[in-house]
Structure formats: structure tokens, C-alpha cells
Image (cartoon, rainbow, N blue to C red; front, top):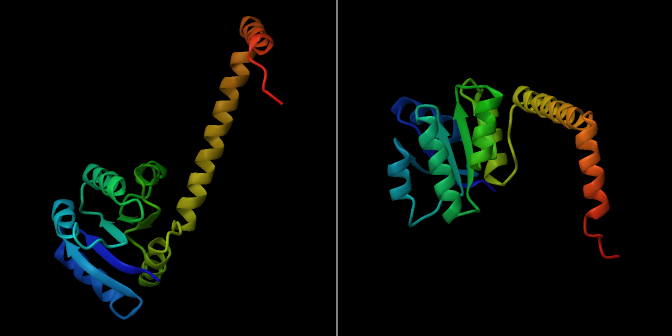
Length: 174
């Protein structure tokens, strides 16, 4: 069950519209709506929500720092970023900070509700287009890494050093 959600966005109308989307869904309780991460941090310290939704008007660095700070204290809290930036770099930054969901600002109401439900229960939520882009980036990075390894071993000197290391390394106990 999704439980208690906090929305953080500087824009009053964004917060109100988000609330209108979620209000008909009785399984989602909006615990609070705040205009800054500072305010959200202060007001939610005593009564912990299980999901923070961080809107687009919160500067990226503030959002990332807030996510890391909260997760250090409360590792069972989940984060969903609701942002206009739809790049793999932005998604990777959010996920690296600890978010498990990333939703484009252009998402339709049913996508918002579905993402909130997924993330609030600890399930990742990414739109298919962003998930595909992340997989493609991972594949490209893997190929690049393999090419670097191949280049390293194409040098006879490096191959010889590696072979020496293999011969002299401590053996695993069986």
C-alpha cells in the first residue's frame, strides 16, 4: 500500500494539480506538500512519509543532496523524481542519489498514479523510453569498457605483466 506521500515543488499550481490527480485514489495519502526541501525536511522529521516526490522546480543539486541526506537517516524511504529533463544523464544522477523512480513532467495522470504506487512500495518506476535509453547507454558503456580492455591486452608488455601477475597471485583455498 502506498502510504504517506510528500510532494516538494516550488510552484503552488503544480502542487495543487498533483493533489487533484491523486485525491480520488484512497490508497494514496498525501501527507504534505512543501515548496522547498528545507521545509519538507523540517516538517517531516517527526512523522516520516514513505515517499517523497520531488518536482521540477526544485534545483537538481538540492534535490540530489536532499535525497542522499534523507536516505542516510531513513533508508526505507523512497524517492520519485518528477522532472522536465528526460536525459539518461539526469535519470542516472537521480538513481545514483537513491531515487527509484523518475517520471517526466509530461506524464499523464494515470502514469503519475501508477508510478506513485510502484515507487511507494519499493518498486522502480521509469517510463519505457527512459528505461530503453538507460539499457542502451549501459550497452554502449560495456562495449567501450571491453574495447579499453582489448586495447590494454593488445600490448605485448601488458599481456606479459598480466600473465606474471596470474602466476604469482595468491591461490584461492579450495
